Image 1: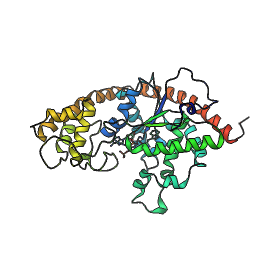
Image 2: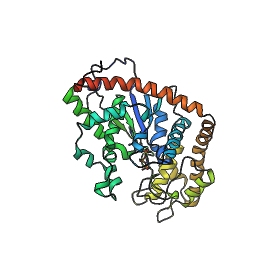
Image 3: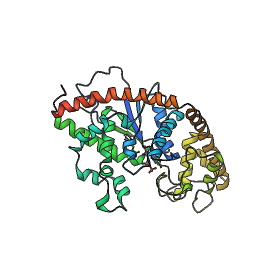
Image 4: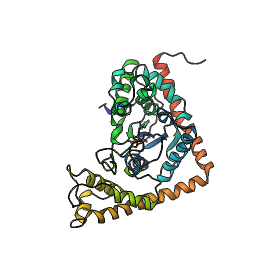
Length: 348
Ligand code: ATP
Ligand code: LTN
């Protein structure tokens, strides 16, 4: 861990009364699910109270896996609408699309020169995503993905990065690369901390509680999509696998119930122990019926707001224009500093 005094790059433009800054991103690579909402977006909304926030639809990350052009465009706008509908406030926070700010790709190149192959090879996500691929046909971008993520975070001199548990390793790599750069070239970066909130940090699949809920793996029934209609949500929760036994109780030997209780607690803002107590003597069916309603109640207002945003496309475009301008203003300052540190001749 770095000292607090360490965190201010000396030549950074002064931000005297600034609140700590956060950066986070989500890939526009398909259906958003309850895991993304609970593990990420919901925390983003809350952090606006205490932090200056920069939130990004990371489309350059999404193309590390082949995308269909029209779908990528649509998913990118849908994702931004989800941010806004969930309560990310573009007056307070910077909301933008990664590829609109070329500094991300440029800083990535510079960071590539100080990141080691061995570090990237150890990344769990890389290992998972390439487990079935032939060695000769794995895209370089998939390997290099964490370096682009480091560039995202470091460009904004973010103090904190709210993510789900699965991204912790990437934030740790970002810290290592930032420290390495600062030591080798002189301070240019703030070393960021991951922020992983307890409830909902790892929502598991509804049909296999040993796997994380994921949009890219598993069947339709393994996840609740943020846009699922109420009857679909109720049905998916009802069908979710449960553990042997009949009591509504979590625990290490009850992964399915632990997951459902965690979802309930995170959405209702209630400690799991209280929920367990309320369901003493009741069965899974009662609990699941109620959980279905809790999920419906949480997602319905978000869905309604998304419909409104879809009816006024110009608004989202406007948010993204302002967001890109504000993001670029910060990013270009960091990048200028980095170029200077490395010894690149300034453009006359
Ligand atoms: P996939 O769902 O396809 O595995 P991913 O993990 O690549 O997607 P992103 O859209 O890039 O998902 O993730 C956005 C955010 O959602 C990240 O902060 C990630 O940690 C979080 N997240 C993703 N899945 C879950 C989950 N099951 N539980 C909690 N948080 C999650
Ligand atoms: N790799 C992340 C998405 C991501 C991100 C970031 C998260 C890209 N850049 C910067 C936090 C900060 C994922 O969730 N798959």
